[in-house]
Amino acid sequence: MSALVAPAYRAHLTPGVVHLGVGGFHRSHQAVYLHELFARGRALDWGVVGVGTTSYDARLHAALGAQDHLWTVETRTAAGAEHLVVGSHLEHLLLTDPAGATAVLDRLERPSTRWVTLTVTEGGYPVDGPPTPTLAVLVEALRRRRAAGTAPFAVVSCDNLQHNGRVARAAVLAAAGHVDADLGRWIADEVGFPSSMVDRITPATSPADVARIRAATGRDDACPVVAEPFRQWVLEDVPGPARPPLEEVGVQVVADVAPYELLKLRVLNGGHQALAWPGLLLGHHAVHEAATDPDVRAFLRGFLHAEVLPTLDPVPGTDPAAYAETVLARFAQPELPDTLVRLAAHSADRVPGFVLAAAAESVSVGRPVPVTAALVALWWTTLRRAGATGAPALQAPPDVDLPGGEGEALDAFLGDPRVLGDLAGDPRFGDEVRAAEALVRSVGPRGLVRSLVADAEWTSSP
Image 1 (cartoon, rainbow, N blue to C red):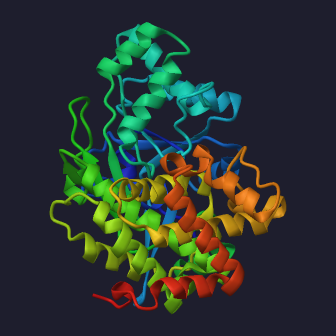
Image 2: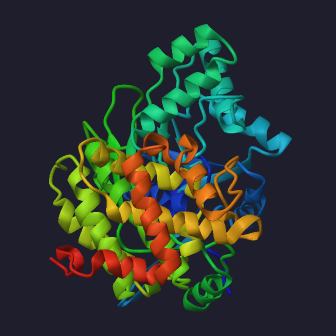
Image 3: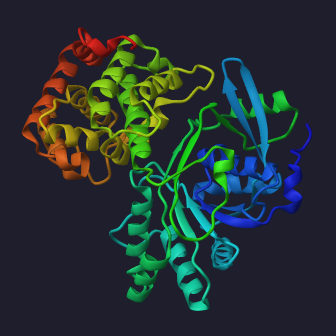
């Protein structure tokens, strides 16, 4: 096996971006866009320093360090696979290691760092309680830059959150409030927090993927990434520090990201949840298996066309119904195996954020949401059956107990705002969920799904 060979541009690349939370998605998405920009000889002062933010990142840290911070992205299609060696990262640091944390802070202080980008999951932006280590290091770096008279960097969230720029801003300001009120005001006035929408299906890399890619390329790579061909990045154009000219490599730079992010979050990410919970209860393991199960596919299409699309704003240059059908096709790709358990992970954040926010809007105007109610019943049933011994992805949201008899536990679940948000305690929605849950017990999950889609007009493709 030969070693990975760095792209020619690496000889001229210098850091300008610090990325917090280096996972498979970042390495198949943002890092690839920057790689393509650098390969054109453009923006070579925007190289990336990656930062691992959890103890789980130590393994990736070691792997990247051993191969000059290079990795392979395998793009899989029905026609075969393409392999790209990405060289946009120059370094990887560990925030969890004392020496690494010092190095992260040093890098964030440098005037050459003009962008800090984040993929720290939907739950990584708390505004209550003590700040996370990620937020704390951002605030400390901004404090030091302010004291030194250095212009601030921009903070760019690349997580699946509606208005993620605003969410990141609120979280950083809350963390700054623990340090210095004047610092918080300076951040509010001077730091840019552009919103962005990001999209590319990137399953977790398996040992089989590693072996296959090594065999296909003849190169020794301990941490490749597998991804679908589709990718999209929509970035808000806000005043502030310069940014790399990403529009040259297909990034959509727009005045308002909101319609794009709402479409993606509710259709693709919400669709993940509408696929995962019936799929798991029906015994499916892989995403494409569930997506090609006729009953699950009809359930998912009903969720998207009947209950999600009516909640969306117009999206410039995009037909939401066609986008929904594209998502259905992407889920069904057998050449890109992904697991339902991965989609179900972090459900305490994802079901409320991607599914229930849209349902609450519909309920507020009297629009029925029977598919969403059934989805919640399937979610609750899976959590209940998994119990404390289930995989972490299938356990109840933190601090939410499921004690007592079936009815008692479900009533507590439906009344808890930590679970259902604005729908907690809503009598009509609660009754729909209870009726759906009763059907699960009487006719099983497939019987529930079929009862919803039997005669519905959205069961066939447009």
